[in-house]
Length: 207
Image (cartoon, rainbow, N blue to C red; front, side, top):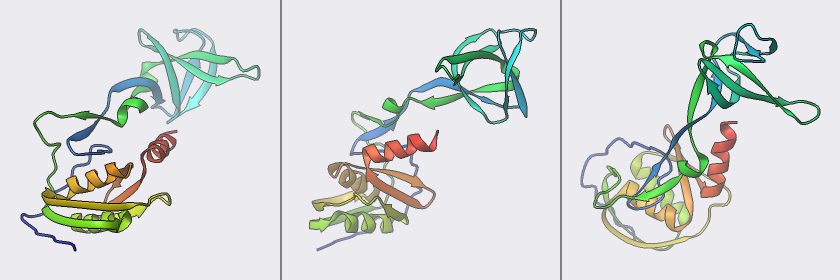
C-alpha cells in the first residue's frame, strides 16, 4: 500500500555532493595540488628564472602536479623519463593557475549536524512499503521530485519502511543509505549505485 499526500509546492533542489543519510551532508576540504596551463603554450624552465634553460613546452589546458611554489614560480612534476625518474621544472604564474579541488577521502565524508536538518526542501510525503523492490521505490520518489533515474547494474534489494510527513528528498537519502547506495545528480538525471563505485567513477572523470 502506498500513500502520498502533497502538502506544499515543489521546491528547487540544491545538490552539494553525495548526501547519504538523514542529518548528514557532504563536506569537502579545499586543497591545491595541481596547476593548469592558461596560455596557448607555456615554457617549463629548469629553474625559477626566465634565463634558465627551457626543458619542455606544454599547451593550454595541460594539468601538472604541483610540488611547491617559489615566489612567482610553480615547481611542477613532469612525466617520468625512460629510467622512471620523475622530472621537475618551473613554470611562471603568468602562464598557469592553481586548481582547487577536494581531497578524495574528504569529498564524500559525512558529518552530523546537531539540531538541524541538512536543507531538505522537497514535498512532504507519507509512504509505506513492505519488501518492495528498491529500484521501484527510488523511481517512485524520483517521479515526485521530477527527476529521471539511471541505475548502476549492481543496484538491488528490498525496502520496508513507514515514513510520514517527510520531504521526498530526505526519504530518498534514507533509503539510499540503508541500501549502501550513493547518488549523483546531473541536471534532471539522478544516477545511483554503490557508493564506492560512484566515487571511483567521479575520480576517473577528473583524470
